Image (cartoon, rainbow, N blue to C red):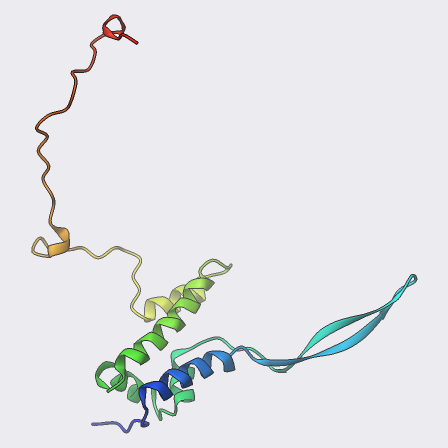
Length: 155
């Protein structure tokens, strides 16, 4: 079944993806709060969140872009007109999860990255894979013969 997709230009899609990553940072304003102390009354700016930050997610991006389902987003990402732009959006989300691997605990980020196709084990390459070819080096000349003992060395 062919799913319905929102219509985008490349520029508009790039802008919407950037807007999504700005949106998830949340919104806040600063309020001046005075903290009375014995020596001085000092005012400190405090962040007051109007909209809390939220994590980057594939579903969140799809919803923000106007897709009606995750399947519709996935279909457009694999065969749509601007698939490469959506792939970059997905890559930005993966980068956010990858940053979380350096925090404790990282189990949620590991789970998310595995579901995005990451694997702990390196891929085994077949012998016919061009990147697995080995280079044979034959040494024709090594230079001067090494000394067999200290007496043969002259400075």
